[in-house]
Amino acid sequence: MFKSWRKETNYQFLFWAGMINGIGSRISQIAIFGLLYQLTGSGMAIGLVLAIRMIPFLILAPLGGMLADRFSKKKLLFTVDLFRIPVVLSLLLVQDSSNVWLIYLITFVLASLEALYVPTRMSAIPFLVKQDRLIDINSLEQAMVGFVLVIGAASGGVIAYYFGLSTSFVLNGITFLLSALIIARLNISVVSNKEKAKASISMSSNQLWSSAALLTFFFIAVTMPLANGIDNVLVSIYALEVFEMGELGVGILYAALGLGFIFSSMCSNLLKRSLLALTVLFIAFEGLGHLLLSIVPSFSSAICVIISITFVGGLSNICIDTVMMKVIPRRKQGTIFGLMQAISNTALGLSMASAGFLLEVFTPRELSLLVGVAYIAFTILYSIQFSKLNLVKEKRELLRGMKSA
Image (cartoon, rainbow, N blue to C red; front, side, top):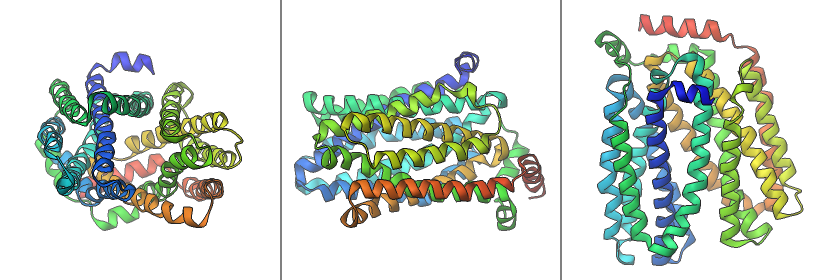
C-alpha cells in the first residue's frame, strides 16, 4: 500500500484534500449539533438535520456524476470547495432560536454541494492511478475515512468546548480553502472531446438492466445501507443506554469505528485475488460481529468488537469498490457512482429513521442481533448473485454497450 502511495504522487493531492475537508466538515457537524441543542434543547432538531443531509443525494448525486463524466473533474472539485466556504461561514449569522431555519437551510446547501462532490471525487480515482494499484488506493481511502472519523470527532468536541462554536465554523471554512488549493495542483488525465461526447449520452435503460454486474452493484448499494444506518444509531445507544458512559462513551465508540477502518487499510497486500468471494466473507464476519455485540458483557469488550466490525467492513468496501472501478467503464463511472450515492444515501437515511422506531420495539441488544442476522442473510443473496457473474465478460459487454450508445 505504501509503495503505491509513494508512486502515485498525483493521487496524494486528492487524498490530502479529502482528509482536510473531511475533518473540517466533521468539526463543523459537531458544532451544528451543539448549536441546535443550545437553541432548541431538542434532540428531534438534531434528527431533522440528519434527515435534511440525506435529501439532496437523491437528486444531486446523479447530477454530480453526470457532470463529472462531461466536464473537468478537477474544476468541479475546486469549484465546490470554494462555494462551501461562504456557505459554512453563514452559520456565524445564527444568533438565537429565530434563526434555526437558517441552520436547516445551510445544512441543505452543504449537503447538496457534498452530493455533487462525492461521485466526482470517486470517479476521479481511476483517472489518477494505475489499474493494478486500485486495491492499494482504495485501502488508503478507507484509512482516510478512519482518520477523518477519529480526528474529526475527537477535535470537534474539544474545539467547540474550549474555543466556541464560531471557531469551528471558521476553521471549517479554512479547511475548504486549503482543500481547494490542493485540488488546484491535481493533474487528471484529459479526456478527448470524442470521449466526452460519448460520455454525454445517457446509458439506455436496456443497457442498465441487462448488465448483471451493474444490477448486482446497485443491489448492494440498496441493501447494505439498510443495516449500516441502524449501526450508526446503535453505536450511540450502546454508549448512552447499554453501558451508561455518556457523551464520552459516544466519542470513544466512534473513535473505535475509525480505528477499524484504519486497520483495514493496512491489509491491502492480502487482497489480490477473488475479490467478490472476499467481499461476501467479510460481510459475513461483519454479521457475526453484530451477533457478538449483542452479548458483550462490558464497555471495553464492546470497543474491541466495534473495531473488529469496521475492520472487516472496511475490507469489504475495499474489495467491492476496486471491482466496480475495474469493471465499470471509466467514462461512465461518474454517472454510475452518482446513482449509487443517491440510492445508498436514501437507503441510509430511511434506515437511520427506522432505527428510532425499532428501538421502541426491541432492546439495543436485540436490534444488534437482528442486524447481524440481516448481514448474514445479505451474504447468502450476494453469494448467489456473484456466482453468476463473469466479470471479464461483463466489462467487455459494458464497453461494447458504451460504444454503441
